[in-house]
Image 1 (cartoon, rainbow, N blue to C red):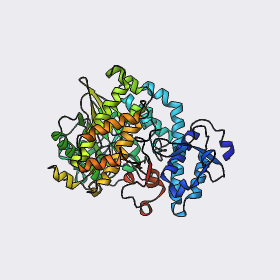
Image 2 (cartoon, helix red, strand yellow; image 1 turned 45 degrees about the vertical axis):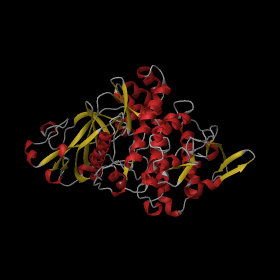
Image 3 (cartoon, rainbow, N blue to C red; image 1 turned 120 degrees about the vertical axis):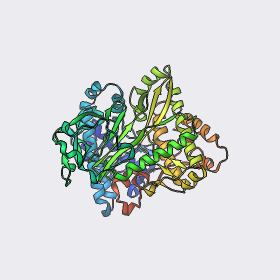
Length: 525
């Protein structure tokens, strides 16, 4: 299809192409922002073809974004990306093009099957499916699961609300490491006979759950015996590699794909299971000192691995109550529905209470303990029980903590295997607070939900900071948020796909900054 023919495209492609171009301009990949042209008619972006694309001021996280009336094709955007990229980034550019095309296919697949999928979804899984169908606020190709074909998405992706049976493998016991809490845990796991394996293996092997997508990876591991019979019907949660495995039980399993970029693999590094458990214990220590906070942690202490990225698992035990992922609040109809059931129809009151809890928790963590959580809208949930709403936090292996602040608060510094989880740089902590807590957990939800979201966020964040007066950490956080002219952003596409770590210098592709946008709290548009 030619670029001009693509101007008449309908459907998902112009939407996706616009999101991709917005991300590239925001991150200023290879100097993309230098292609902006200002004239009497406003601001335009010069594509490689010579076409000028009209830009509009704003967009929540950037200065200019593709104007709503503009129709783009992926071919036009990717042609421009190739034109500006250096030869050293050619493989990253090609990988990102694949992400774009797989994302478009996934979006079109959902258009064909999503409505029927939601008709099948009942109970808590419905909110997981709805949340999975909400596009990421910043990463344009988040609906891509690299290498998973259409039939795999229909069978295993949460937005399609499928159910499927797990596979199992017997792993030699000498390779297995279990958390102490997992030693006597049987949970939903089968016996050897139930998966077609001889009982004599009980003395030498231990059963591991295997996601069907990972079966080809596990089958080739020497000494591992793949069971012939499936066992345990499960359904995927918002996180595709985590499935509902029983009453208030989630099971996290590795799968051979990447999301949010080529380098964000969905396998499980063995050390992250222990690090996540240590981080959870640290947060439990904090909560014991802060009993007034309506925050609850998912229990993620039960896990096991066999020193292989596709032989690992983690059980998540959930608290009582009705649990709704925060990401689902951005799905059509969810907020009015929850407000009608729990807030007498007052959507703004629900959002205000959510923001109040969110900032009270995260500001105290930051100021008093030197902790910043990578708890974005997909790692947070609302828990409704006994007439109250609490905030549930899960998946803590990405947090950042300052040893000096922990020590000053009387808390032991966890022995994380991943040294990147510790820093004494308060600005690094602030970067996480702004890009995760403020941008994704607060702004992306509130701006889509209520009028004057900026004012509501300002008031609740100011209230949380006011508790600490002129405390140096509170002053720093106020300077980086409420008083800042611009807010830091992450260069997610650049670090996760387009540029390899050696060239980008990113120690962690999920904590790579270098971009900024207008402070929507001071200058809302």
